[in-house]
Length: 301
Image (cartoon, rainbow, N blue to C red; front, side, top):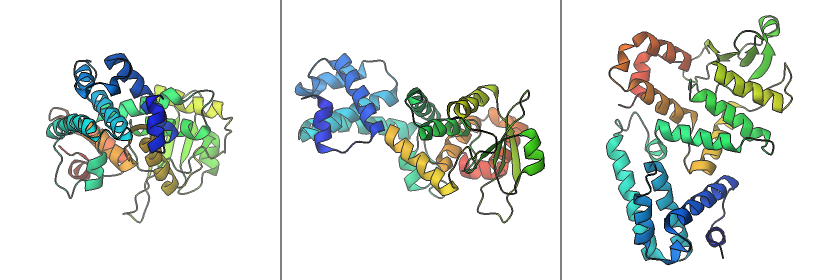
């Protein structure tokens, strides 16, 4: 019986988790040889350590070793893989010290990933977008690519695809739009989804060329017409979908709030970069808050 079948006998796996587990198990065979799970775990652990792969990948391989051993009821062997995972977790925590608990919650700490891991996650979703892909995953991919550039809240919810003329003459209040100006850049026009304020300020983003191509590919693939709701979800539904997708792909609950923290910390934690106050101020405005709030709440270092 194949390792993945052994795991499925003990666990109910989502499609995303199943795919990741299969990939990790194949990697383990390449690194440690056939039937590595029947050998002394030290063989597999040594192979992972010497693989030259990124720490995040190594941690995932130790995790699949643990999952398989527990599925085989090999608790003692499983603990050897768990020990390696814990060592990597400590290494990560030491390198990414969090700010006080009033800035980032315990649940967010448990789900925090680095900017590089966020990029890797989005690339995994990208690799699944193709002819056989459903509309929902394609939509999630386009939204994630948008959020890693400018991490708004759930402001893509209910977004309508339109052109410049219709936007100027027929736009509705408190409605988000993706405006196609044809020869010019696409513009994301949105009312910031901030429940702490009575008014919802309107903001605009001109999409960079690479992001514009991603949204246009989504529009063409699914036959979306001007006037159609391009993201047919409420803010709450979008939040749940993003969390569900990240759990399936990487086992983490990555919300828009967490993406905001990850991206801001990546862009503005470097002391030299903080000299660019004008750039930070513009970025904070697009996110829907002040530089002061950005530093105190989202920038953890």
